[in-house]
Image (cartoon, rainbow, N blue to C red; front, side, top):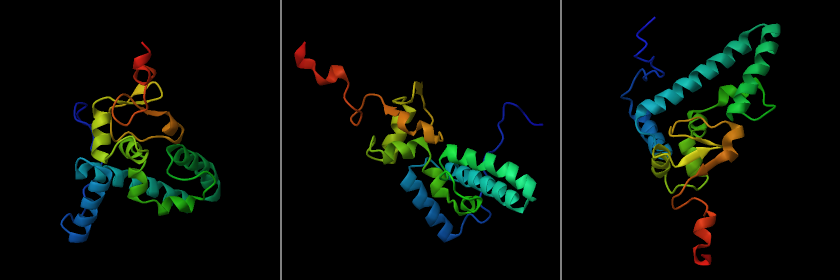
Length: 172
């Protein structure tokens, strides 16, 4: 079982961590997506690895099992925003870590222009200035579902849309 106070590791470290090309690629991704440390990158790589493993298992399964599981699996990936609706199961094998990292809340806020840099987006999230729908989200690695994309709002701050009070202070 394990100790309930100590959570299970959600990532696996690379087998050869000191290869120069791998180090350069990791450093590049950390800078582009504003990740805090390599552990966040390794978590995204592990999520992608398990998703691709599930796709390979479905591809190798019998026809009946594949028909049942493929629709459920692909619908979940469409909801997560990793693949487009109607795409075949083979498209899952072509997913990259960048696709997974682009679905993070931190990346979404930066891409939409609500923050000047990924680090500013991370700070706004951690400080509680971001809501999705009616919920305040303070986790930068929160995976944004496709239906939640339009509900992302920034509360107060230089890049947020002006409120009614801020627009017409001279009318008082």
